[in-house]
Image: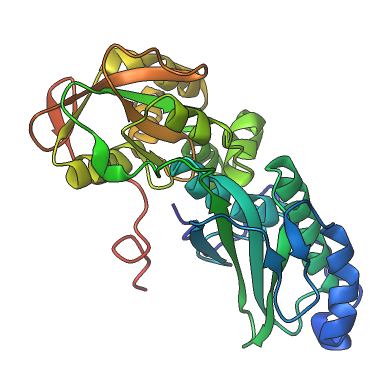
Length: 336
């Protein structure tokens, strides 16, 4: 989901525009400020600072990348630099977890207007470092580049290890499987709604969930060990991402409204029942894990059933076919 807005509402999270800007430092001086935030870790044979990092890796390496663009994926008025750093870690490491893997390293790219305050970069790096430590993954390198006026882009490439297991793909679901989720549904989308309406104080916990999602990274490998047949992270909404599993597996995901009732009820006091239901079904940037498990097998701790896999196609809720929702970087973009 993208924050496609153009106004500066309440709840300003931007860093103070004081102190040096990037144009006041050379690249080495900037790296001297931020590299100490990323300590070395086991498995990192050569850390950040050389031409490339050297990692101890197995026979197969997971690799994924995500990018965030200011004005499209965040607003300075709503998200601090620390928030941006934390979120870009979450969305990448959740992808590694969704394959059943554990993260082994992060590569970070920053593309910025030279008038960007150095304080913003330091705060971004601090938020990224804290989130990486929480995910137990080292930052091993990256790249810096200048950009035209107003441009600020951050990108992370995450590497991961399957620890000898087969990857859990989107294409393995079979009729009879149980559809289950680990984590919350709709909280990030509800927090975004409150920010858009200028009422973040109505539910600060939902706003925090949007600014800094906290996926259960360890549950990806646990799901793989429990025999998950298909899995992905919910970055673009339950309906859109659930249909991706259905399409890849050639099946139908049949969800139960009763199984989602508590999720809707939890959001209703802040955004109303109708919009709460929409958030649960189509809200993006949640980064919870959605998976399918063989019928009759006990779900791992922290997982709950949402429905079952059937012959057919698409995704249904109480028998009604659902489409769309969630964020699309192109079809959903502002064409101005």
